[in-house]
Length: 117
Image (cartoon, rainbow, N blue to C red; front, side, top):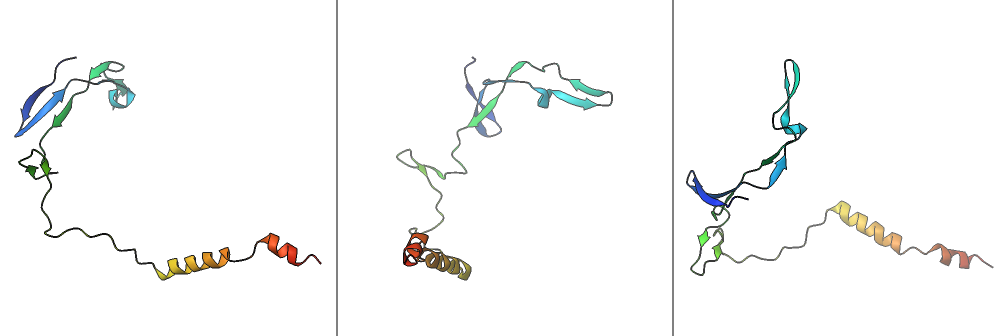
């Protein structure tokens, strides 16, 4: 396994890996041409799959603070507040009331004992 070395891609510093290896299957190696289907020369072979990873904190974070922690973007100048309970639609209130009424109805066991005389 080759060591990973940082490189510059544009203005970004990225780390490129030569692994993990992937097998070249039919989906990526078989192509349609005028004469039918052709299979690539690397079909069924294991090839290195290059992955580029950058370590730039932007745009997710504004940057590093003096204590080397990532600073969040400053969008608001007030403290966040807890969410208010959701407003229930008239249909939702009617369904909850119907469920409550249905749960308050007597069981069949209770009805059977009343009629046994």
